[in-house]
Length: 453
Image (cartoon, rainbow, N blue to C red):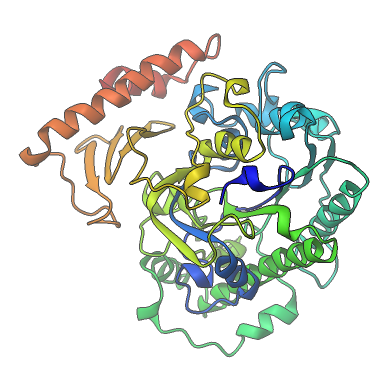
């Protein structure tokens, strides 16, 4: 079906988890956690196997989501936007929906939860075209740590009823970010759980091994983490129930995803809480802070009753955070001519709706720059250049080698591919330096850029 059959543009709710790994929920293969509401969402919507973030830390990932552009275009320093915010002239998904959504009527734009997209004084109504901003850092006793933020989100849904326009609501969760703080009632659900190490992912087994040096029972950290994930699932369920109670569910797109891969543990006898960061990367290696698949690949589920296929799993299309802006703008009936002309993202609305198929991303590459590491993904082949002293160029077939163990860079069968992808990376580095303006990269990045090409 086409969204043009809908009497009005849909409401949109985005739930963005924080540091949640690809393999942390049941429908993405986790054998131990309890996520019944996310399982329900997957049964009623479409799950994407190839969902990619465009950065591996919190703020730049949100930059990509809001702007539809690779975050490296904005600054050589990953935290710049987090500290300074966007230029007032910067168009964002929220400002575009606010001004032009629903064929000119505009969306009511709402935010609840974590901010991390500018300084504290920017956490106010009107910033980036967001009508109401609720950033509540309080924790309700005996409840998951985002309980109050979900309450705020439900209040914003109720607030929207008084307006004759659709709403866009982003719920930016703090779960499963450090510190892991599940309520005792949820931890009890896992108290007697015995783990089969062969059923745990390689990344979780590695974390357990590291934490065994400082903990008598490192699996207790895993129990804490699983309880945190279950608490997050409760919050998603409360939002879904609120949509149904308010009779909004049939014309609301609900999106669930994470800002990047799972955080690493930190083996430190003075900070054992870091041994609760037992996020799972599924079949992939690495996590947060790394450009490996475990760092950039995340779960993503989208639901829109009657329009988005139910119970489907898209294993073909590589959807990326920069695609949210053009895709959601299309579904919100914003004319393509009114979008910025410099987007890195592509409109995949027809793929969401099941009306079209796309293998990988067609001719559209994904590019990451993290400190002194560059990565380019074209279809199933990923080029990585780092500032390591020895072998610092890599090429991986992520379909055949999801753990990125076999370096194809020196394989002559891939001679043309490595030349092409290196050229894509070099062209990107040339381009972004002109966009940085007066911002100067640090000396390590200057050397890295000089030596890359």
